Length: 275
Picture (cartoon, rainbow, N blue to C red):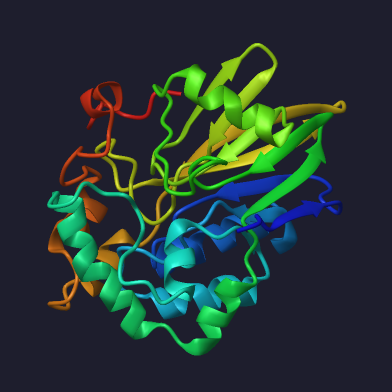
């Protein structure tokens, strides 16, 4: 299938980048407030995918995102949902805890979403490209070659490098893995803004985003974290339909397991984000 790549030409001023809303309406509402306080227009707010996920309000999250007017690419969850597939497409190991949890939250999300929300997901491109601060930027979810590929900071540059070649980009904005990071090699830069729907396994309930900016014609970026009403989000998940382990993670800031993590990131659980 041909990729749907949209080139953006109207981005001026600050750009806010984020990922993984994961059906977390409270975190999304707080991010919208942050964008408004920073005077960042909705069209300058870009999601790296997975508006829908683990939490209790998938329909509300999609409709809020749509009405906000922000931009977003399709994550693997959007792709699976709009195609009517039975699983989330996260490539969790069969029989793992994450795989078992996905058999709860994914059918729940399917049952909650309206046709209007599914139609909206059909409009989401696979990637964005844009020029910013004399850099060629490319937005993807997992990797250019596989939407659900997990790319972390500790992932070898040998695996990251082909993505820059294939996309002819200087900066890649990625998502999917759930952890904020950046990795620079020579004149190439991989940034993951993190996600807003779940904490970053750092022992706090805070969630993450990135703001990029042009200063004197040069590209600059900075990661930010923020708090929101995570207690409400967690309480809404106590509906006998969703994994209580994820509801607990919203409060503790610690993932139930580190199955998807490489040894480096697994060893940092609870020790804060290393940027």
